[in-house]
Image 1 (cartoon, rainbow, N blue to C red):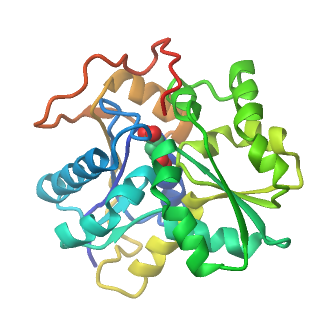
Image 2: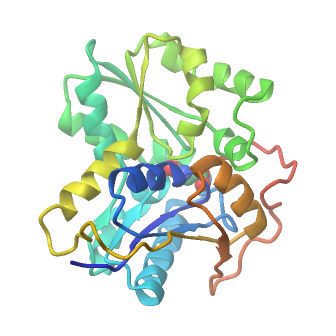
Image 3: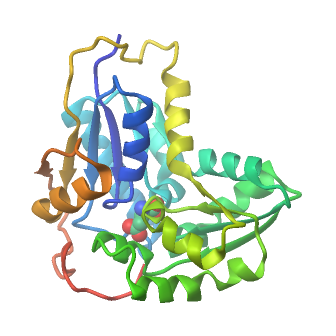
Length: 287
Ligand code: DGL
């Protein structure tokens, strides 16, 4: 039995949707979560820069916490870095894109499907390529949703402003009359009600969080990596490169009581200190 923790990371709070699903599905495993809130959002950044961040965080998780596996709980980082991470890191590396696409293709009945994500994720073409490969007969409509991530990072998931933004950004998805929509950003499940109200009840929302947790379980099951029932009760750890108090407060609201406390983590390269941290009133829609 392998009692080492599983490393999970995202640009901020979004990956907590994946962490939640993993905690529920794999109660014997311990997680070390890194929210890179000091450098969020990843969505508008160059993919090469996001790739460097992802490798830095993964190497940190291996070197400092001896994680047995890495879950890239961020679509933008998965699109930018999954292949490179698998070359650089000598542990299993799981992304969120493929599990999400498989689930999307399973649930659609009409064959008209949608994916929403950050500018970086949609612009990378990762979803378009994978849907073409796994479901070439499907009719795919993609839309980038700049601004959604910032609303979540501020803890603002049900305001009038986010509703107005959702109605505007989701127009191409509504027009395409999809019957299934993949939330291709791990922050978006926190906006699920708003998104669903905007699209109507006929559209099934697919979150990659649950599918990714199932994928992790599939890899652990029957392998020497799994931590069996009966392992000593260990607490999950949550690290933030930004405002730790805000991470603890909003993170606990979003994830639940398992987030007892947040700890600080820093990187060698300088953090963009010009960007206001969590809890600010920054309203730029850059992502
Ligand atoms: N939650 C991340 C994703 O899945 C990144 C959001 C961001 O930082 O722009 O894409």
